[in-house]
Every structure is written in C-alpha cells, then in structure tokens.
Image (cartoon, rainbow over all chains, first blue to last red; front, side, top):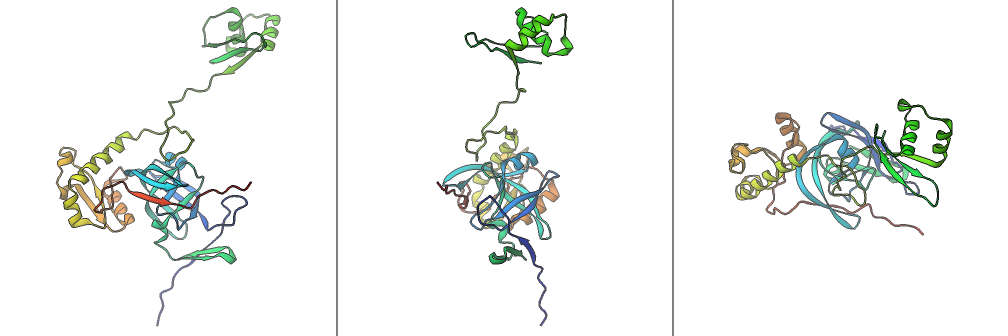
Amino acid sequence: MDKKKIRKTPFPYRMISYGEPLAPALNIDVIANNIEKKGVLALLDSGASITLIPQSIIEEIQPSIVDVPVRFGFTGGEVESLLYALKIRIPKVGTWYVEVVGYAGLSYALIGRDVLNKWSLFLKGRSKIFEIS
Amino acid sequence: MEGTFSLQDQDIFSTQTLEKGETLDYGFAQEKLFKDPSLFGDLSDEYLRFFITRWEFKPSLPVQPKPQRLSGEKGDIRIAPDRSEEIKIIQIAKQWHRVHLKGILKEYEGKYIAIILNPMKGIHTPLKEAIIGSAKDFHRLASKVYGRYGYKTIYMPFVTKSLVKREFQIPTPLWIKRK
C-alpha cells in the first residue's frame, strides 16, 4: 500500500529570553498592505487560543481590522484590542491569513492554536528540534 | 532652532524659551546668536565666553502629536494611528449583525462570515446582499474576500448564538521573578 509522503520541516529550538529553557520558536514573515515584516520571532504556544503579534509590528504594517473590540486574558489580567487579519508566512511550511491581536508587552509573537491546529507538530525536546508537517 | 537656556548659578535659576529671530533680553539674544552660526553677528569674545560658561542651551524636542494610550498596553504609551473610520465601519456592521442575528444563525452558524453593507442602505442592507462570503476556516474566507474586494476593512465574525465580545485566552506568559 502506498503511503502519501508527508513533508516534515525541522526547526531548532530557540532562546526566547536568557536563562530560560530553549523553546519551540521560529522566524515568521508577517504581511499586510503589501508590507512584509520578515524574521519576526514567534513562540509556538498551545496555551494561546489566538495568535498574538507585538503592537509595534501592528503599527508598522497597519493590518486590516476585522472585529472590535475583543478581550483577551493575559498575565493574570484582561485587556481589549482590535482584531486584525494579516498573512503569516512560515518559510517552507505555508502562508495563511490569520486573526491576530496586538500586544505591546511582548517583543516576540505567539503562534496560537488557531494556526497550530493546521499542522502536525512533533516536539523533540531532547534533541532540541521540532518538526512541522 | 528653538530651545531653553538655563542659568547654571546655584542661587539664580532662570529659563526662557526663544524662537528663531526673536529679540529678547540682550544676554539671551547673544547666546542664541552664538549657538546658531547662521545668525552669528558682531559679538565680542568676552561676551561669548561669559555666555558659554554661564548658560546651557537645551534644544526643544520635536513637536509630536499628543500620545494616545492604546488598549492592550500596560504603562507603555505609543502614538496610535487614527483608525477611527475603520472602527466605525466595523461598528455599523456589528450593529447590522445584531439586528439580523436570527437569519444569520439559520444559515451560517459555526462559520465565519464577511459582511459589507451597502452604503446607500446601511443597516437596512438585506442579508443576502450584505454577506459576501462564508467559510468554516478564517484563512479560506479571508483569501476569497480580500481577493475579490481588496485588502480593506471588512467585518468577519464567527457566527455563534452569543453576541458578546469575543474572548481569547493567552495564559502562558506569566512571570515568576527569582529573588
């Protein structure tokens, strides 16, 4: 029986902040209004129900608004944001339109379950590699 | 150049704002001439030395629009671009959504929909005309709608019975500080 070959793309674990364990993170490209912001560090976060982009990038690329306002729970509190639609591109994996919220308290993006659920994700913690297929 | 001169003596403190070409007290005016070479006039070395040692010139910061606090920030103030027109479009579409919820639920429950109102009819735009697309997946809907109408402000809600604000959980980035 022929099995359909699944393409696995490996990525190394990255350091998000000094002194912390390495994390499944990768560089993504964020695209809106024909502006492309390349190499934005993004942490894969299965705890997040939506993708989050640093507010500075939102201001730079001015993505289209799709809802207002939305609330999200964060660091024990609750904040309101606009909801934007923009394209994220993960090199060698794919490009998608996603809904995102902006937050100024983080310098990196969080890839939430809205995107993670499109893939199969294999965390090889011991070898500090993760695979997306 | 605009700026403030401060007298450095401990027992005398004085500041004054000058604008280019402004004639004020003799001392201020001379200092200004010295700092701005294009306005350099006939000044004696003695005067210049006096003003260099006694007065400090601090240029004013560039004039910026009034900062506006963005939601989603804690203590960090940034200058927000004005997106009030886009927000207005979304708010009117949301109002339409509320009015037509029953009909929308019947056909689109569990899907994302894209709503563009006819500017002439506004809130009275019929359901079939206002909903320009639907899909179970946001990416599919956004690709279709932005492909056809361009990348612009379009209200794209997920259809559920509840019309409360959408809520998202991002519980991970909690801090624990080591002492």
